[in-house]
Each structure stands twice: as C-alpha cells, then as structure tokens.
Image 1 (cartoon, rainbow, N blue to C red):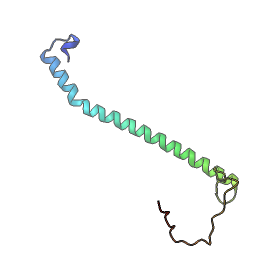
Image 2: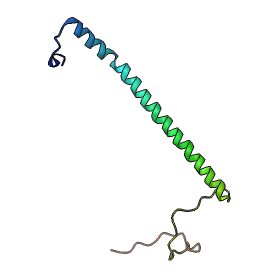
Image 3: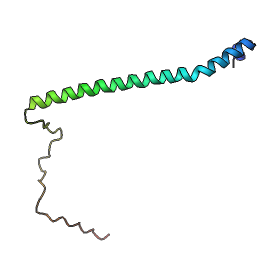
Image 4: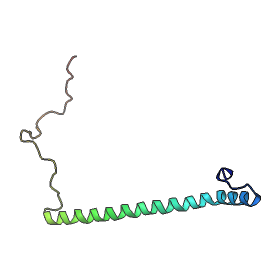
Amino acid sequence: MVESAGVPSTAEVELLIGFALAIEWLLDSIRTTVNVTGDSVGCAIIDHLMQTRRASRRASIGDGGALPSIVEKPADAREPDETRSMEPHEEAAV
C-alpha cells in the first residue's frame, strides 16, 4: 500500500504504519462518540422546542389541552352505533 504511493518500505515506515494502525481504533471511537453526542444534543433541542410549541398551542386553545383534529370527518360519516351487538360478523360464503 505504501509502496504504491512511491514511499520506500523501510523500518521507520513500517513502524509508523504499525503505530497508525494500533491507534486508529481509538481515534475512530472518539469520532464516533462525538458524532453520537452531537446527534443526541440535536434531538434533545428539537424535542424541547416541540414540547414548548405544544404547550403554547394548548395554552392558546384553553380547553384543557385538547388539540384540534387535523383530519376532518367526511360529511357523510355516521356516528358509531352503540346499540349494535358485539358478536362477530358472519363471513360470507365464497
């Protein structure tokens, strides 16, 4: 690998390559830790902002925290019939 870059293979070069490979796992672990910590901090910030936004929306509604429904009920939708029996439906013969 080093020889293809035009660097002659000497004892010093071999020592440096061995040293670099020996500590690469440590450097990689540090990079991974920094990456995961940054992602976690970003998620925590977004979660805090969303909770603040939800709290302000609930306060502006003033009905104890119920948020309005995003999905509107179709005009021809029927209310559930509470008098229907809870027995299973009979399957139609095929």
